[in-house]
Image (cartoon, rainbow, N blue to C red; front, side):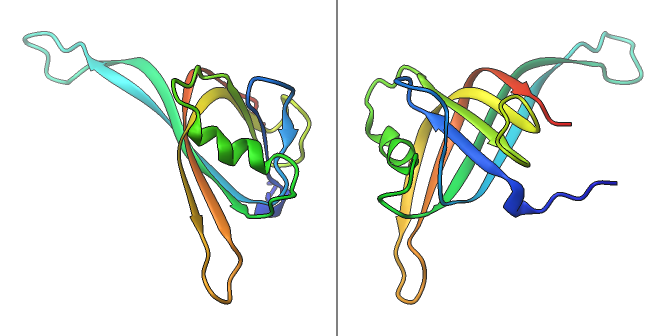
Length: 140
C-alpha cells in the first residue's frame, strides 16, 4: 500500500489568460465532490430506489502568503472579478505536478478569500472555490 504525505501535493491555477502554473507556497488543499440523488421509488416498493444526478465540487486552497511567489497573485486576486465567466482552471495534485496524473482538474470560480495575519505566525491566505462544468479525476 502506497502512503502519500501532504507535502507531496500541489495546486496549479490559471485565470483564463495563460497556462496552468504551480502556485508556490501552497500549504494545503481540499475538495469535496457531491452527487445529487433523485428518488425513483414506486408505490408498493418495500425499499427506496435512487439514481445519481448532477455533480458539483467545492473546496479550499491554503497558502503561506508571499506577494512575490509564482501564482499566488492570480489566485488571490481572482476574487475581485465581477461577473466572473468561470475562466479559471484548477488542477489539484496529490503528488507531483505532471498534468493529468494523480490530480483533479476542473474549471471554477474563487468564491471567498481570507487573509490572516497573527503576531508570531505566518500570514495565511485561504481561498474557497466552486467547480463549474466537468471535474476530471486522474487519481490513481
